[in-house]
Image 1 (cartoon, helix red, strand yellow):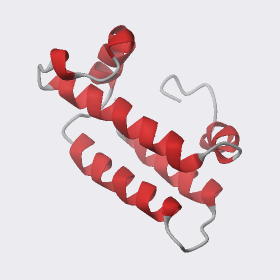
Image 2 (image 1 turned 120 degrees about the vertical axis):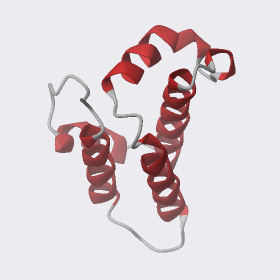
Image 3 (image 1 turned 180 degrees about the vertical axis):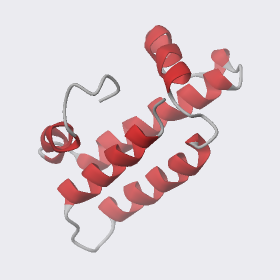
Image 4 (image 1 turned 90 degrees about the vertical axis):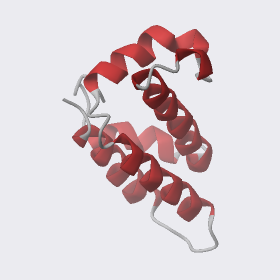
Length: 104
C-alpha cells in the first residue's frame, strides 16, 4: 500500500477474509507506534522487532493528521465489532484510502 503497488480494493480483499476487527486493531497499534516514534518515544513502541519498518513509515506519513486517523480507526474497530451488519469490504477500502491520504 505504501509503495502503491496494489489498489485499495486489492489490499482490502484478503483482509475481509480474515478477522477484520483484529486486523484493524493491529493496524491501530502499528500506527500508534509510528506516532510514538515521531514523538521520540522509541522505547515505548509495542512492535520493537519492527522498528526499522516503523521508522520508514514515520518518515512517509503525514503525522500531523495521524491522531485524527487513529481516532477514525478506533471508531471503525467499534463499528466492525458492533451489532449492526456492515459491508466490511467497503469499510476496509475507506480505511485504507484514508491511510493512503496520509502518505507523502
